[in-house]
Length: 358
Image 1 (tube, rainbow, N blue to C red):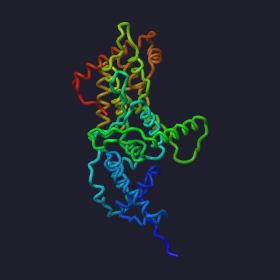
Image 2: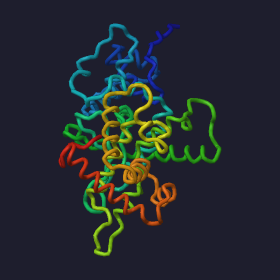
Image 3: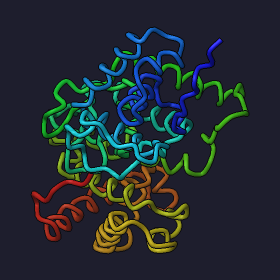
Image 4: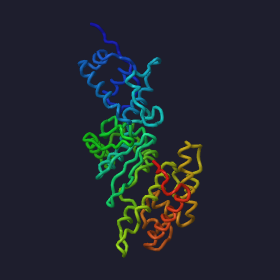
């Protein structure tokens, strides 16, 4: 009996689908279709269909970037990308970013992303000159509201799983919608989360949902009903919204910078120390920290407390009033004044029509 030669495969993350593994083994490592079929005990036409399907999806910028990142983990010393791997210029992303995503981290963050994408008129937008994606949805006034910032490697992994799809991948800004597979996965992840909350969970395996970094990951996602959104729905005696759309947007802008700044755990007690202490960080993170510090310093005591707690920490107005010793229902007035001051700050420092963050 002839023994089949074992094909060595790279140590890809557990979440990488088998068709993608076969595609990379064929295009990067040079393994033949028949050799892969013999190892997997399937017909060669099955492997061929998988390879062609992956190649057809490479027009999608997230999928192309993920495949390039995963190809860098190939164990073959002299492996080079085939001509099929060189036809597309991907989104600007860190090298090998998707290959560093663990199964537990993908599950944890996909739960937040897929929930946001299930909201009415929600999409995930990816621009070619950005290193992260954003999830936006239309608000009741016809504008757009950002509800999440998604790191590049997470967006790549989600696209590679077919949980999102892009009808026009060649557009300057690719817009992704959740798929049927994505909704099915969301139901599975939601059920798993409910089981963990009820104490029915498998303690084995790579389960880091309760680790400190889980809270940091959750901080990137803006709650559906934030204090700003709630106030924007209220109307004054004149029938106009209590918070104008521009005030909501400037609060979101501060929130985005705050998320990108990756503050320390004691930010509520000492926000300046949480943004300045610790080891040196990436230049983009440091730039975000500088913008947050400049904005809060411009507001000054009182106003900066309202902006930090309601815009950045998403703390409710009643809780903020109690912690700061303010009278009841005064928090919304202070918050509106601080947002008006933020509008002036951003216009003076970056211009009214400065590029948005994300």
